[in-house]
Length: 549
Ligand code: ATP
Ligand code: MG
Ligand code: MG
Image 1: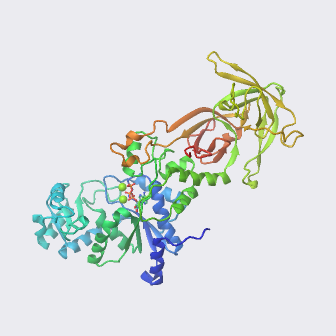
Image 2: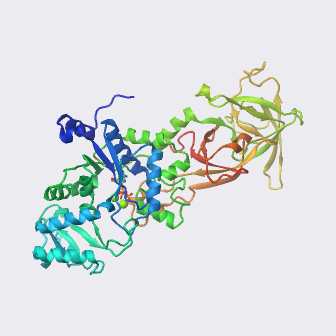
């Protein structure tokens, strides 16, 4: 592996280990909220959290940050676990913030007893209005001067369900003049009479992120709590609660979130695409979700590789989608067997080849990998070739087939175009050609120089297949940041379905998830929609970057 210098998190961890902080122990966590499927931005966080732990003999907890009953669901819990495993990581403990609700409640009581928290009567709007601006201090609400006893009583009654949603909140009593707005008496608890996917109806008050995340880290004795840059202004609050509660001092460190062009990366927006049926589901191959990328044919290693290439940064950045494509192309070039598939078939008849003859030819599976072996191809007088590989009036540099033009059929003979047959609309229905005997590999004329090589399948032997070609889901580089609804930037041509492609017959035996290079057409994977009668392929990526200038 390449030598590289330590990134800033590795530097911090190495310093901590050298100084004997936590006896050199490293424990990280990956804290998804189970309100959607994981996307490639989460993969970045997973690679960072699990990677740091692996590097320093540490461990990583999987903690579901399930403090919002309204948006969360066990379906998401299961998909998140499957996706982390698929990416190739194993967590130490599987934990749920909701398992800490009783402990968090006790922490809140302790804060009230210390005079550091109070029950608020004001509405969300009133609280916001009284908060002031970054340059002017906020004004205390009447509730701020409540006694400890009254606060304890009201908080207990909040828990007991005596109030409606929004009627009361619990706030930390910190500093209404702080230049950091997060320190101006932030909310700790809110009332939500909602069913929770794990705790059921036991609770009607739920802790806010800022009064759950750091405390959960501390309960688990997380040493390095890694999160994205937008949490920098929350860090003083994270530390303030831990200090005042006098609990295990976890520390928060921030890195820039992973953004990718031509997609959106917020679960809320991805969920909209699913619910409004703009895509076929969370695992639609156009989605930036891990399940979508998997179905599209991406390997876990290509995604891990991308995350490592990007590294850890302290400033916002945008990764071009083509870098992900580069990673998968590089990998599949080495690992994917080559096969022939004709996506837009037109019949080609070789007039000087016996009509009843079938030859079995041998083709190597992967020129990049000798151990991949070889396979057999059927050759006969009637083939399918790509419609675009024939031109009736070809320009000078057309190195494919046309009347009088010669081209090599991959792994087979050189042929010369002769004539065509057309239907009433002028579309070519059959191409006639002759073959040049002795031009097969290993024969006397096999090294005849021919400018072009095209792929083909034998018509009688080929299997029909459905092929799904994908393009970017959005027409804008950063649809999430555009004015107005991000959905107005949906690419209407992001999916093209070909129902009658012709492929080598052995592909009928392929299983979902198998990956191939369709020669000259790109890398493809077998979709789970496949049946024994019809294979469905998804194009993972083209052979070359179609967008490169
Ligand atoms: P979203 O806005 O997509 O819903 P989130 O941050 O609310 O994302 P969580 O389930 O809370 O989603 O995320 C779990 C972890 O993954 C958090 O630590 C979060 O910081 C991290 N994470 C989420 N998105 C990204 C991203 N684009 N790049 C890096 N880390 C991310
Ligand atoms: Mg979150
Ligand atoms: Mg979110």
